[in-house]
Image (tube, rainbow, N blue to C red; front, side):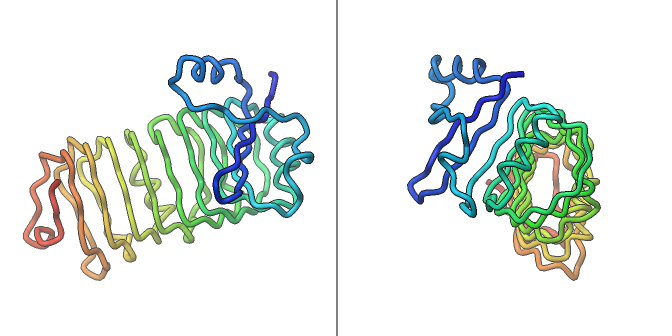
Length: 231
């Protein structure tokens, strides 16, 4: 597998390194104008990114062996702001401590993070139905959780992120949404949950509103009626 690195720097000066094992695939998308430019191709990361610098880091189509070498090299003595995975099958298990702002999990990701100590404010799962990996038993630092395309793992995932204040759920097949254990939840945004029939919430929680888009089967109970906003 030929691994290539692409570097982008935003207006605030934060650099993001995109690591991919299928650069030809993305370059063709760029050529067809269905993907933004990949950025500057670089060979030696140390020539462009200083130690102790804060960066974003994304992996795409990278195998286990390459991931471990690259991940350790890049993250050593650097601060990772955002970390993302897309189309990665990483069949290894190692201890890892990370403090992030945002963790992104894209499509077709298989990675075991049960032994990772992750502190992050936000987690986004762009395709829960294709996610075959595992989180640690709990990640209490997460306050904002965004999930797209859930098939049958939502209840399991919500137990991991029990401290969230905001939940965004789009295109889930869940019928009965249990929010009882999310005692800090303030807002839930539910879109295109076409099978949703019931929502249960603990009376002790702090939830202020549940915003619904195209969840037509759901009819709120008396207890939930004042919280529901349909858009």
